[in-house]
Image (cartoon, rainbow, N blue to C red; front, side):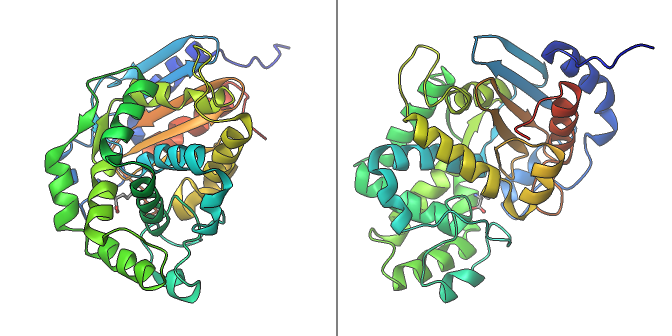
Length: 309
Ligand code: GLN
């Protein structure tokens, strides 16, 4: 009898390329930020980078897309790296069990958002970035370019404008947080930073590369420390418990990796000690996660028989 064989990364990607077709284009492209709905839904990409320096990619891996909430992982990294555990006085580390843009818990929990990956939490982190840096957007762009080794990464101005024009919910959250004293800078300034960082455009390989330090105990492959081992552990933990909205339970169950998703259809995930992986396909499920991306990650961890569980 032939024994079961785990596939290599390369074989798994080839298999996924073969099977993912029926899932591409499923779901709904985000339209509450009007510019995002212009994206062609029939696209799919996947890229893997390993801590021993290998890179793999399939599909539309070099097409740029809006990273949206994936930026929240970079922002948390910078805030935690600069301010350490102080930040947890202003934002907690618990899953919210609610939509990423929900405002409901904010009032009953005194303006302290549940975690840094829901919009209210990311707004508090953006406020912290204003306290840390004079020019937070430029600092964050430089940081992301360095992680991704790509100096051409920039903000999509059309998406940025569209976010501002359709951001009433985020303005409500920010003012409510401010009324509890948990937002120190000007609301418009903080939200402009928050929207600008959501509007950064990257391709799927950029994204896999930029998450590799989280799989490499906080270090770039050059050895340069981005955050400490403990901080890398914590960021991965918050991604696992809060990174894919109120879909985290199903995501842990089916994929089993720490991850951060965005409504542009991207998902970036890590397998600490081994690799980072990014997927992109614009059609979203009702929670806001890429349908084909979710399925491809599930198939990937199953085919290579590796997840953190
Ligand atoms: N810019 C989006 C917003 O503020 C980000 C949401 C997301 O990707 N979940 O709603």
